[in-house]
Length: 191
Image (cartoon, rainbow, N blue to C red; front, side, top):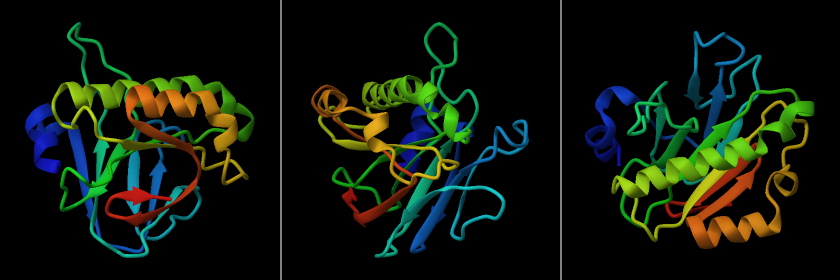
C-alpha cells in the first residue's frame, strides 16, 4: 500500500510510519502547536495530550500513512478535504484492513460541530482512493473519528446515527465509528 500511495499521489505527500507494537497512540498536535507539529504516532501514550488508542494484541506490523498538508488536490487546484491518516498492515493484501482516521483535538462541548465535516472527509478521501485505484470499488474500509479530549471514550451513537451507518455501509462501503479506543482483531478487522 505504501508504494501505491507514493506512486499515485507522490512520495512527498505522506509520512509513513511502520510500527510493530501491541499499542499505538495517534495524536494530532496541530491545534495545540499552531501547526508546528501535526499528526504523530507513538507506541507509548505521550504525556500532556490525549490520543486515539489502538490496541494491537497480536503485534503484527502496522503502517500509518499520515497525510501531509495539501496532500490531495482537486482538478480545480483547490485542496480537497482530508482526514489525518490511514492505517493498514505493513504487508498489505487486498483482504487487509484499511482504517481512515480523523482526530479532533477540541473541547468536549464543541464535538458535535465537527460531525458533518468529518463524515464528509471520510467520503471524499475514500472516493478519491477508489477513483485513483488505490482501493477496489467493493472493498469495505473502516473510518474512525476520535475526540481525545472527550471524557466519554465511546460517543459513537451521537456521531453516527443508524441511518448513517446503513448509508455508509451500502453506498460508500465504509464502517464508520466514533471512539477513542479501538482494537485490531486481526489483519482484516477491528473491534
